[in-house]
Every structure is written in structure tokens, then in C-alpha cells.
Length: 394
Image (cartoon, rainbow, N blue to C red):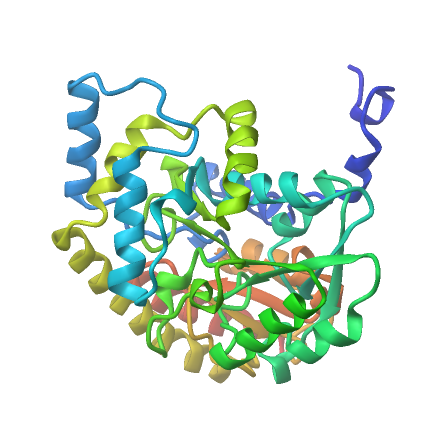
């Protein structure tokens, strides 16, 4: 069989896109489960909750009524209006529906933003650690993700000073995530404002990934959209709205970019799933929003349980995560190789965590990402297994 490296037609940009190592661990876990092992998954960032019944019913009605045709490339007008209302009610910011583009998940939103803004050789400043796919979207359009080591003293996030010190003639903008995957930490509002102003002064663009913003625990609701109409924001129905497999998200862009983004969306996607869009409308019903807030409270309860337990077991958590459902923990007191450590943990304890290998060079060997998007029962069992595993290694 012809191997990929033997295929002469492969684009050289593939050299800049690394494998997603978390999926390798997921395959290892699946193999163990087929052998009859019980595995506790604290690796992939997927809510254990599914869409509420009101959302499922909306999808069923759309299918029963035959509302399955293509929509506009920018999405159902009523869904764009509902998202606009969500920003008004939750974040106290007015966003014209015309600036909202409904997409096939946040991944499609990032792809469209990068397709419109990233040219060959253009650099985007990003934190290290960060979600690997974000930097790979930049590489897919022949841009360069310029990663800046951002330690716990900066909440694992970029600062305005970092942006200022690393700006050059080849830098075109910044790509931020608040709250972040893998760290679960947010950029403080005042610092985010300073970053936006710093980028604006240099004629660059700011993209903010807010897909976990609905799961921000320790602050009043805030969106980067309040910092100016030139800020580009990406969001998703996957995390807060518990619709990972529905592949539905949105992109908010300045008015002058809408026509260009629409042209790209028409050619690359035609539109997001019509069924998912009709279901997404139900997410903004008061009944659904009440359910989401209850689930958010449950995620916070899980965080408040797992962080002290991890610290008791010897993990270092220098920054309390304030959003999403991740803990980015320093495991260097337990192992000198996070990748080997997570493989041993999976094989011997049946617990999946993700090594820092995926998230950037500064924390490759020292950190693991722990997802607490699983039940309290599983979290308690995981702690018991980890305690036994770690005591056996000492």
C-alpha cells in the first residue's frame, strides 16, 4: 500500500501540522475497553451532558416538517437574531445580526477567519500552551503561529506586554482563547482590553475564541465584543450548549468583512446543517438556558472537588481554572516525562489524561490536561485509582 510520505502530490504545508496526540491516547483507551477494562475518560474535552430534550424536540420537528433544505451561507436569519439577543441579554452588548455568521462548528468559524485574514508568511501571536488545532488553522493557510511561552504567572495567557514585545513587521494579529483549552483560564478583562488596544495601534486584527465563555465561573459575563466592532469572536454550540456532534457554531465579524466571509462560506461549506440550526434556536429558550446554567453549576462543583484532590496527590495547580472544564496541572513532581506518565496511568490505572505534548513546547514534558467533564462518581473513582497508582510507583 502506498504510504502518505510516498505520495508525490502532498502539499508541503502538511509538514507544519502535527498529529493530534490526544487521539492516540483515545485509541489506546478504546483498545483496553475492547479487552474488558473499565476506563475513566478525563482526556477529550466533551461535556458528558447531551442536548436538552427541548433541543432534540426542535430537531425532530424540523425533520418531520421537511425543513432540511440549504439555508443561507450565513445561517437562518432567526438564529442570527437569537444569537444577537443572547449577546444583548447575557453580555449587555449590542451585536447586529448581520455581523453574525452561523458556521459548521467553531472549527469552521476559525477556518473562515483564517482564510480571510491569513496570508503566506503572516504571523499570528498565540500563547504557549494553546489548543493545537487553532495554530494548525493558521498553518493551513501558510501562516505562522508565533507561540509565546505564557506561564502561570500570566495565567497561561498572553499579555499586552507580550504582544508589544513580540510584534514585528510580519505579525498580522493575535489569536486568543478565553477561557482557554487546555488551561481553563481566562484573560482578565482589563488585560484583554489592553491587548486589543495594543493590536489596534499596530493595525492588526484580534480573534478571540470564546467557545468556553458560557462556562466562565468566577466573574460576571463578559465578551470581547464589548471592546469594539473590530474584534472578531468565535463561539460554538458544542460546550456550553452541549451539542458537540451537531457541528454548529458562529463567527462575529466587523460589517466590512461579512461579504468576504459569506463568499468563503458559500464556496467552502454552502451552509451549516439546517437541522442543527433549527435545533440551535431552541437553545435560547428560557427553559433550555435554565438547564444550561444548572449544568454550569455542576461543572463548577466538579472543579472545586478535583483541584484539591489533584493537589493532595502531588500535582501542582498553580492557577485555579476559572472556566471551561479543564485543569492544567504540573506533574513534574511525579514524573519527568508527561507523555510516558499518561501512558502508564492509562495502562495501570485505567484513567485517561492528556500530556502537554499537544499544547506547545514550553509545557510538553511537565504538564497534563485533566478534563472534569465527567460525573462526580467517575471523578471520585479516578482519584482512588490515581492514589493507588501513585503509591505503587513510590
